[in-house]
Amino acid sequence: MKTSIERKKAIFQKTDGYCHICHSKLGFSNYGRQSTKGAWQIDHSKAKANGGSNHMNNLFAACISCNIQKGTKRTKTTRAQYGNTRAPFSKAKKQKIKNGNTAVGGVIGGLIGSVFGPVGAVVGAGVGAAIGNGSSPKK
Image (cartoon, rainbow, N blue to C red; front, side, top):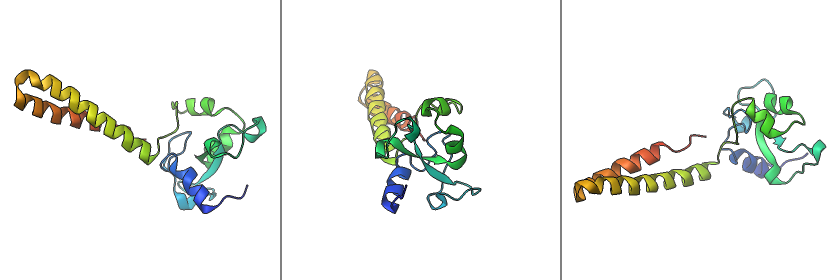
């Protein structure tokens, strides 16, 4: 399958440069470079042999070794071997989750802090926002 550089970038960015199976960090410039740290290939989440397509929602970045090990097995089965239930989030998705966690933490902290008056509400909101921000996903 011939792949343009833009398409490779889009596939790589879907998981923020992590293998969608084992969650190891990949190097964009190491595409197809076997025996190189961060080497990766494009994996068909649903193997073409099992009816998968070349549609973007079926394509993910994977370590070469993970891709070979997976073969035509289900992605869910292969991820489970590493204790993973999902692919890593994209950078945009992580930021969206982080913003939501910060806002919810701020509201909850402010409500709890309001028991101690207006100053408590402000302090509680700040602490809650910090806790929410810190609980955001890394991958």
